[in-house]
Length: 258
Image (cartoon, rainbow, N blue to C red):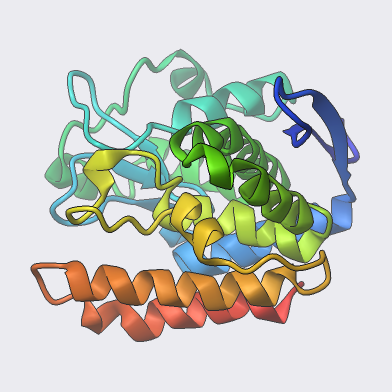
């Protein structure tokens, strides 16, 4: 586990059977760096952020969500799971972070005021030095999404979706697509993350994506993601077209591979 990411990929026929999947350390590092660039522009300061209008901190290369005490929202909280993984792997997690039950900064204003505090500097240092482990956490999250996606999909589409997921997971470039898109736009299984009946998560992209082999899967996924996001923009009641170029640039990175 120190030299590779070891995941249980749930890819076989129901009931799902665990299958070992190994990512080479170099591939894990490349994927982690790419996700860091996508989410934070590759900057250390971007590893600790809180977006205006949101009620949670976004931390690490994948902008993993961390809610303050008593706060919840429509999105899955993913940062505490990363902290548990870092502790398990003997990363130098500060005591205050290991013991924290919730995000210690309750609001955006408090978060911004603490931007240069010792704890925040310590947190950014930890995150900047654990990119590969964060990539493993992102990979585990994408793999965990498969059973949810299959459960949410129409029965007649499940085996086709499973096959597409398997084709993507067969290469580092395809796994990058899965890992990054789940961080980018979610699983697509939560009805609250839709505009009417229009969803834009991994489920919807896999439904849109044509069946292909492992070599062609990243490019097919990239094109399907663009079409899915165009539908989201058209369905939105606010102007989301201003994000189209950035979203498309990110999708283009899926087709380029690692």
